[in-house]
Image (cartoon, rainbow, N blue to C red):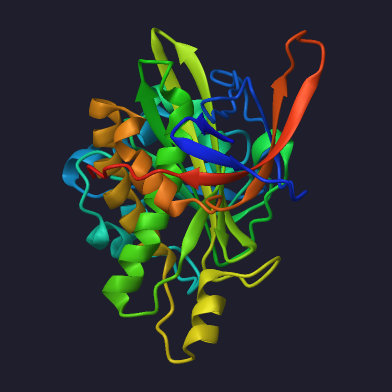
Length: 339
């Protein structure tokens, strides 16, 4: 038996080897976290002496940063100091290198206004609480997160060396909002490939585990969280990313795997990865906005890790009271890549 499932073919097998369950109601592989958080106080209290540093790639974004600081409009919680990049000098060697990031960034919209903190409760809270007051594409980066989170209230450990950021997006068509997290995942896998190629390191085959996890081999190295709120006929989306770049714990990281492949490999830097991410994301997002996610499906299915996996599919029987379970193998048919 072969049945079609949103661009995927499942071929039936008699072997019992279920990985996860798709129900017949989930035909479009959609999963999205929605949270009505705009306008409320920060969900996580800020750590003592939290610093939020504002910086822009160009004079235009730096003017916006000055307005945000002078008007004191950002919802930041208590104990947070808001400063401009030009007002302070970061002496910590582990700090995010803002100049290096901007030098590698080539976008028109995304990632050009930066909110940076050495230590923060949650980058996602900063963006989601201020989304309607921030330009599209504003990014918040932290060296360490104290209360990072994933889907279903899962805790995301956020030690030093981990790339931690969230950014703002505005969308009008709610039907396509759930697919945004797939575009974010895809942009990150493409960014990692691009940085490896640029640095001359072995390629890291990071793949997407549906719906929003990033795996290197059989180990999770990253995850994406997207939340949204509807206001004034727009969806204000906050997309958060956590990626193990230089932190070997709690699982492993990109640089640790590179060293195993080639001890002489150059290490990847967080600044290079996030800049490459926004460079890729902006192009993919333009295709997504103009042509829909279908235009990216070919690239997406080549990047996800489920091809060839055996899963259990549940379908309602004729009387609708019971489910019929069938073990199938995921096979993706060829799709044209327009990106």
